[in-house]
Image (cartoon, rainbow, N blue to C red; front, side):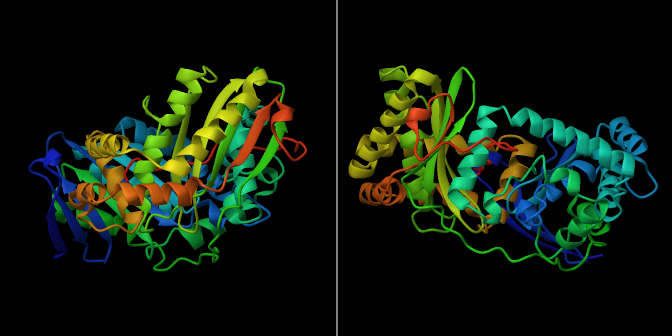
Length: 450
């Protein structure tokens, strides 16, 4: 047996490790870091498609598949399948994103054969037994009912609807109280057939395993999947033009405000400048402008933060805060003013230098375990970045100039905000209130690996 293997040195933080581009005899490709520090193997993988592949009239199909695909497979019913995982302490999970159907597998080295076998049958022979389908459907319906009175969930759902309208990105990825009951087993099987294919599969593996052994397991696990998926085309979309506001009435003690606007895609030449700017403006640190102005100076909220969200067909910046209902208008005005000033003036040289230092240092903490590193390497692949990106990243950060950062600040934050207010503060939002409906969690946060 032979396989192709190309090695590239990783960051100094991963001493004695190499990121390898492994190509199996069957043509399966993976990024691989061999690490014998502990006898563990972690694998992250993703199929193109995600929630954007849900039928327009049945949002939530992909989420149901992700919730059910490890509930029994081949000749193993749900109970037996779960017992096999538990007996070997194998961690197997699936999740849905806008553009990807993701999976995670983690096991002790000695149980890698059994772990990959269980993943193989889950992907190629899911049972979708009627009792399991109805049990998971009931759980999802309970989740949706809870979210119908959850201000954060309502803010996330309505923010995406405001930003993307009827585009697939504007639909609730976890489904609705109306759509989940209509999803049939045939819908689940059709999703699996269309989405779980090898042509746009990305894999990252970190752990104590030899390349030849891994290549064999990857072929056995993924080689039986269809060679090519049958994905429904998804159009590029630019988020709605700000400023726009919407209000969702909800009788809760704390009003939730979600704000944002059109962002930058991952391959935009200004992406790194935008990423650094966002850290300065509201990147979650105690030193961000939004935190200082909204919390420290005015005491309007316990926390306020903002992230860049990039997807295959669009991008956003999005932030959130919570405040007392009687101070919601004041909080929104403060956020508007901070962002407007940042758009007009951009960062200072001191802010830029400190943000660069933080962004360079924080990545090593984000990739300091096998699972985190596998997640990061998968993110780089799905973002279409080169295998040596970790080596190049600091130079990209250093290359951002003050003039570029100021130009990007004006480009990104100079047009006002899309704002969704959930709570009692109806006077804070225009146009007229919209009624809360079936919900989903807030938009996925920006990936840790950037």
